[in-house]
Amino acid sequence: MNKAQLVEAIADKMGGRQQAADAVDAVLDAIVRAVVGGDRVSVTGFGSFEKVERPARYARNPQTGERVRVRKTSVPRFRAGQGFKDLVSGTKKLPRGGEVAVKKAPKGSLQVGAAATVKKAAAKKVTAKRAAPAKKAAAKKAAPAKKVTAKKVTAKKAAAKKTTAAAKKAAAKKTTAKKAAAKKAPAKKAPAKKSTGRKTTAKKATARS
Image 1 (cartoon, rainbow, N blue to C red):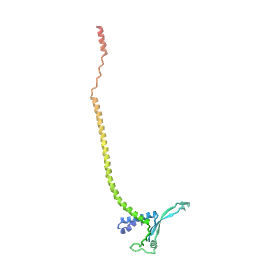
Image 2: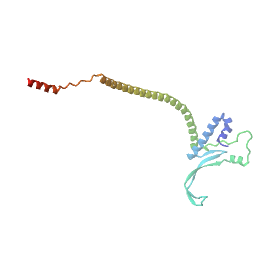
Image 3: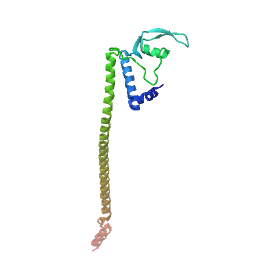
């Protein structure tokens, strides 16, 4: 049985598949957080979860037979409770069509740290559910603002392009007008040079007379 099948198995008792999935997630999250924090989670009749320290040691590589050093580490451990063992071994029989009878845990079996972890996990889920709609609303508000800003920037760019184009056209018209005016203006005639030949002839006529 995997997690999805476990959720389906308890969906009817929890009032729906979503409620069952939330319950499974909350229980597993609380157990993991408690064990990681060094707490021991004990459910009477079912078993206990705890963190176990493994000191550094030497081991053998199964392929080469070489001796290798293994570092100090921590591992999770589950120990089945007596009621669970009796049911698995067949000493006790499972009830037909009902829930497995599990004795209520005595006070203190679930340590204070683990209980606090369960409460924190539930509180986080509630906070996350409340925060999700707020984030969506903020995102929706931010989206129109970005669109308006983008439109303004685009409008400014378009106006700048129009201004530049108009300036270029005006400059081109001025240049064209100057060229046209230069073509229409009559060319100044250079003053005619006095003929030297005429002066010489006049001098000669004066001398003869």
